[in-house]
Image 1 (cartoon, rainbow, N blue to C red):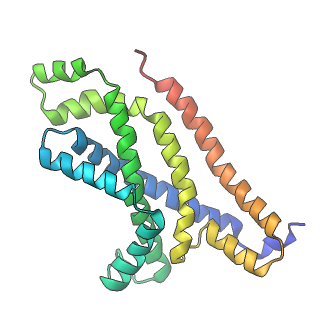
Image 2: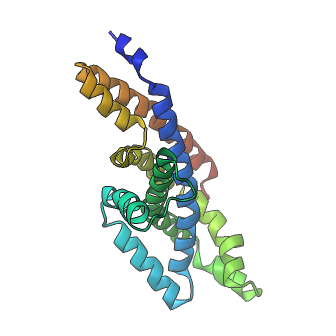
Length: 221
């Protein structure tokens, strides 16, 4: 029944999906944390930038961002992110697009975590002479991350599924392989089942493990 799978590199396609997810997740966590710091910071210009970025990016379809990365940055501005190999360049541009998009949601998840930290703790930290950066890095963010594990898990699962959009610019991940398989084989239901099962294998353990971690590290109030 599944003999036709031997002709396709299914594991390789899902490995590309995993790479897209992990690299984009790291980039989104770093940039999203910086955005959250801007949004709660004391500088009006930075707060305005963070707010404008989040509200703008969240309302732009991910497909538009990915296509802009390929057509706008690569084809128009000739920005290839250090590689002239088409596949490598498209992969890096997909990671960039996913990072730009997902970081807006990471920012809001972390900002929600920051809002769970009692105001008195930040005030006490400032009272003993800590700067805003020290208060944020030493007092607020450690607790905010613990409170935001649940929302960040949802963002990570959504990111895993959003990697399928990278197929629009030719990145050889699971969705592009599925398209190729559907075009070549008369096995639509079986192909859909295989790809769906693959994504379940990626997302279900992620949700279960991080859900358990979230309960373990939750701040007791």
